[in-house]
Image (cartoon, rainbow, N blue to C red; front, side):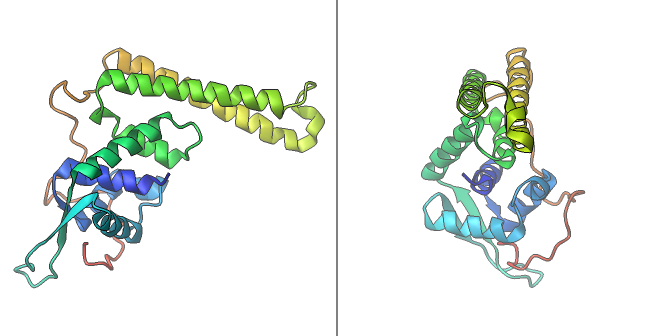
Length: 213
């Protein structure tokens, strides 16, 4: 699973309707260009591909009065919304996803109801514990990883990462169960996108080769 599809769908959904430069600006505001592959080229490619797949609806806008090129605005479709929530749930439950996928999932977790978010995170803990048990049972010798020489450090890394991931997830569950954050159906959501015209303090300043999508 790639984080870029979840990130792009989530950004478009938060705006309701957005052009490519707005989506790029949001992702840079979130720092996604640092912890994922959300670079300008991949963002615009994802927008165009998901429009072809019916997940986004493309609206051609008029050319800028200042003489700039016309921009395509995107709106999420019903299929796109279904795909978005499927990707979100997978990002939160799958223990073997890369950290950028989990990060994207956490970024949109409040789009779920609180009870579902907790249930999905419990699934994640169970999956991590199951994976850890499998590794320690089948891959680590009975006399410990030391008998594997320096290769045993790989086993230690795997187990340590699993333990840290489970501990962090349990902490997040406790915070959510304790009332942290505003989830779907609970009131005004946290606003995580930049308003139109607001300068992005985290913008990369890289050239926009696709004209803003």
